[in-house]
Length: 485
Image 1 (cartoon, helix red, strand yellow):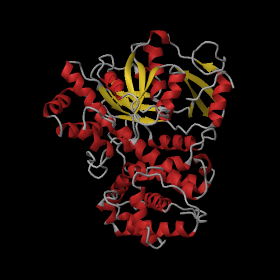
Image 2: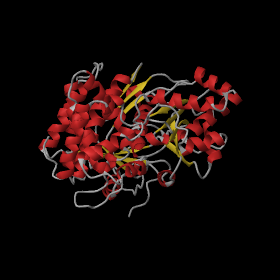
Image 3: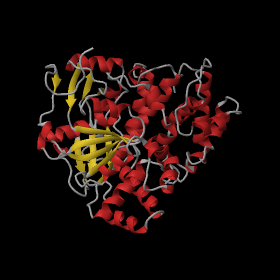
Image 4: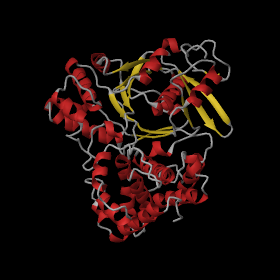
């Protein structure tokens, strides 16, 4: 094993290095949740902006839960490798924009100190949908979420993302420091608007003056993010070492494609992200976001559920099945019919591009990984567009297939009886609903349609569509070989 990646000197010539003087960087961004997607997306975009335009936009990262990623970044002075894989091969880029890593549970006071530092002008986050503490049924604050409960009870010692944002903004207001811009980069529809609502609902319960100050002074821009980022494996670390000449335990891998659409509303400046290929600064992100959620994410979920129950480990393997690939393409076009025009985007071209990305043999994106947290993802990816399709007279058949596939996946067992973990925040609730239900399409679909707050009445009240789901679920229960639809 080679020595650890800790400096930019002496690296293999096959590694692309940052095109700026890292020693002159200062922190301007604090990012919560330094997972793989952040390292494949946000940090490389910021690296590119620093190379193109400079500025004090170095990144500090903070983990609100587990320490592994932050510790690996700390051991490497913030450096790590992004591997970009396609059928022509793999290239390595060493990212230098991260300056420091924090672990919040070890030093919550230290994280709060960074949140109130005037040098920190953006607080971005990729913490996954379930960490925000919102109620999918209402779009507002989930008063039963453990972090929300704890932080409302003890606002000055937060543990969740909303609690930390609110306490950081409160301290800045108290000291007369300009607010930072909270920037959500998670796959939530209208993520900035959702974050604003959660913050304001939280503050309305603890401090009316702070509530008014945030509402008047703090922007919450929405973003649309897109880059397929599989989980790192031993092959990731081996290739990073081969291409850099150093051991890198923070290395990640991703695809060549990357896209970031950002509403240009910031309280106190931002990096020149628009100078980086794939970034677009806009007034309103909603059209782009809806396109991605419905065409890309919806088709991804469809393939993940059908693929996993059919025994396919990776999305690229699912795409080798011509019938499933054709079904994904058909679903993308069904989803496109629910969209308004998207400025600068040809939706047919976009669908073709998605099919090619899913089939990329160099990307090992596990169906089981994509299938997780279905109750958080189904509404915006599949259920809302299904409602719109039905309202316009469409059969919404591919949406019925996707929902039936999720229901089959929710049974938590393969056709041979082997069990698997249903990785979903409502897994226990789902298991209780179907525990004593016959394993038939009508019985299981009826039970899961009754899951509180998930399926809108426009779907559960549409007899033809719910029957279609039930029929397709029965087929999937009876035949693990994924019969053609």
